[in-house]
Image 1 (cartoon, protein in one colour):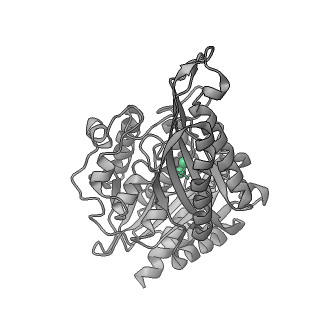
Image 2 (cartoon, helix red, strand yellow):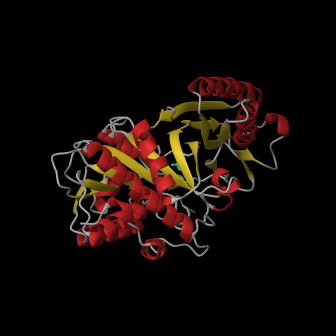
Image 3 (cartoon, helix red, strand yellow):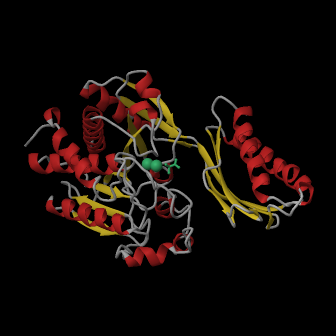
Length: 416
Ligand code: HGY
Ligand code: MN
Ligand code: MN
């Protein structure tokens, strides 16, 4: 029986899996477009299921599409130790965001399988549905249902910007499973992910020991003015919704600057209607993303945002509707799992540092229902949510090796 001491993942096999699956939804600029519940998402799900079943895992799917590949342990009455992340991407996503966590976990399963290493607890590898929240807002939707943050019906009725409903798309690709979301208890979850920021690269460290995730809030605003002729309508008689939106984009930016250095604020999605060269825009829809590690600061940012709206809109004779559609509070991860990650990084010989995640992750919600933590590896220039996202062969291998070490260390410690 192989001992814990010398298990090593296969870096080339991991890299090949990353590059091969990157072709599913691959873009001309070297990224991936694999929106949740799209045909591309179905293809990568089918591939994932087949690869896990080749290892003797049983793959189950819950009612919101979360996929669980289970490898039995010596004592299957114990709760599973999980690895998980997501296979869906941004419209112009990179090859590694989410994918590294799932395929790094697959590499761990492949290593256990080929060495015949037997864990005490069963191991589960999870593909969480709709982590990105790009097609169906909010983000981390299906891990949120699993954790009891959202109802299944709330998820089912989420619509994309074309009016397609989550439930219909889930059924269309054949991934609306039988299992009740949250219907089985996890013993722990480790999520391997790229940092999506510049800190590890800047400090030349290979591993981020992630202690938590910052707070995040999403808002939707619709500004209403009046469509009018650009040639015949004097400036003082216009109700230009795009002008109001433009001033709010500046206001959102300034609110983040006013709460520096940790606050961030972004208007990322905007729809200008009717979006015609010679029509004064009568309606604009836009989204706001505020983040900060401290909920009290997010409260003041939210108040400043809501105070700015009428100040901007009223002088321009515009009306508006605003609603907060998502609020994911700051999260702290589990100290025992954090320690296993630190231990794993030391054992594997990688420099590491503690850090809080700026990006949201499924782990932020799973931490509500099971001991959870994350492992970060660098990405070039900290660039992510970008087709140029780049993590090296060695960085991917390091992350998967530390994931293996951390999972096995936790298995050993909990086996007593
Ligand atoms: O929004 C996020 O932080 C994540 O990438 N879904
Ligand atoms: Mn991600
Ligand atoms: Mn992402």
